[in-house]
Image (cartoon, rainbow, N blue to C red; front, side, top):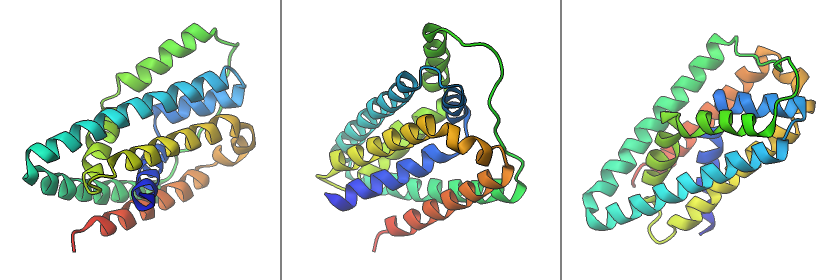
Length: 200
C-alpha cells in the first residue's frame, strides 16, 4: 500500500509542479493574500475528484479488458519520458519567472469563477488526472485507492505550500533560474518513475 501511495504522491507532485495557468493563479492569490484557503481547497478538491474518477474508471477498464493495462502502463511510461524531456528543455531554455499581478482586491465569486475555468476547462487537467494518473494506477492492482490517496495528498500539499508560502517564495520565483531548478527536479522525478514502471 505504501509503495502505491508514494508513487501516486511523487507522480502527482511532479505533474502539478510544472508551470501552468493554475499554479500561476494560486501563486498570484498567495502573493496578494486574497482568499488563499478557498483557492487552495478548490484546487485540491478538484484534483481529488478527478483523480478518484480516473482511478476508478481505469481500474474497471483493466478488469474488463486485461490487455488494456499493459497498453496503459507503456503509454504512461512514454508520457513520463516525454514530460521529463519537456521539463529539461524548459530548464534549458529558461525565462519563465513569475511576478505578482497588480491591481485591487477581487471578490471571492469572481476568483472562484476564474479558477473554475482555469481548472475544469483545461484539457491538460483531464489528461494529467483522469487519463494519466488513472492509467498508472492500474500498475497497482488492489491498491488503486492508495495510489489515488497519495496523488490527492500531493495536490493538497503542493497547493497549500504554494498558496500560503507564496510570500516567502515571491523573491525567489521572480527569478527564472528558480523555475529552471524546479523544472530539472520535475524532469528527474518523471524519468525516475518511468524507469520504475517498466515491467520486469
